[in-house]
Amino acid sequence: MEFRDLKEQYRRLKPEIDAGIQAVIESSAFILGKPVKELEDKMAAYVGRKHCVGCANGTDALQLALMIWGIGPGDAVFTSDFTYFASAGTTSILGGTPVLVDIDLRTFNMDPDDLEEQIQRVIAEGKLTPKVIIPVDLFGQPADYDRILPIAEKYGLKVLEDGAQGFGGNIRGKLACSFGDMSTTSFFPAKPLGCYGDGGAIFTDDDEVDARLRSLRAQGKSPVDKYDNREIGMNSRLDTLQAAILLPKFKAFVEHEIDDVNQVAAWYTERLQDHFITPFVPEGFLSSWAQYTLLLDNKEERDALQAKLKVNGIPSMIYYPRGLHEQQAYAAMQLPDEWYPNTMEATKRVLSLPMHPYLTEEEVDLICKVLLEA
Image (cartoon, rainbow, N blue to C red; front, side):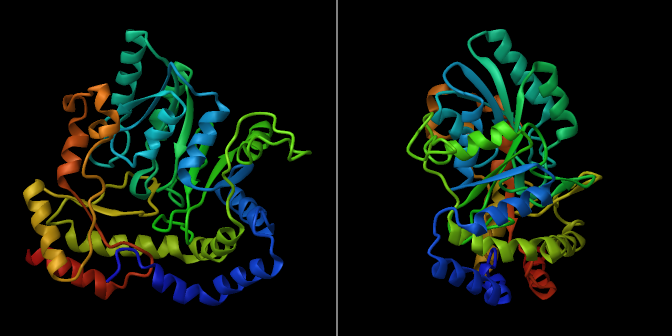
């Protein structure tokens, strides 16, 4: 059994994916070929943004957006403590300071109450200037933008939506990657929409920002003369081959995969909700289910269940075994565990089960049978 079955997805989409790859090879337009522009246009239209700019990976997408806003030394950027390192690390790369925020233990997303407390703490200390909030759409579910966006407006902060795991989710029909001033996603293979390598994208409604992003992803080059570099940028272009692979995958994603993965989640929840704390999806929210994550009673139960699944040939994962404040890279910040009680609980109690649109009901039955027997 696969944790995320990319092999089965490829088997279903093989003719279209193979044809796309072959067309790129025959054209020899390996850098910013036609499939890149086609994908950007389709994704912008789907999300409801004016522009989509492809880049090399989801980390670069975050960094490029922060570069647009000139983030650097003395700037505070607020993000979740319970997420992949890139959500904070990109701020550090630019010389800014990530300010970590605890999570809501029901959704695993940023806790708006703690966000405001952290903003007020930074203002009171007077050492950093609050600039940006990076909410993370964790495990496929958009963050609580109904509350986060008014907080950002109150304190005059930009919002950069990290939709790496949330692409395809929505709040009352408004799609992930359409929230905030800019938004990003990742095409890492295990993401809801993944390629066969690395890739990412930034979304914006601002024409000038779009033009600057396209310049920054290509070493800051002029739009009319590629050997006239107008500012310091990056080498971060979405590969044409990856765009060609993503086009048929995106079509399947929109046409049936979001519906299919929500059916899988419903099967899990129906079978497990009376015995475990299953994922909480607020009213009006739709998840794209990057992960299906149980919250167990304690670390001992979590570890025992994971071992039982492994014995039965069922893969599972722990996302995440530690908060960002516990990372060695941020040890010098000396952030106390007491500031992040829900993150600390989650790291001990979460367990993610196999989850993808091609999981069968029989496979879900097998996984749930092992869990319930254990």
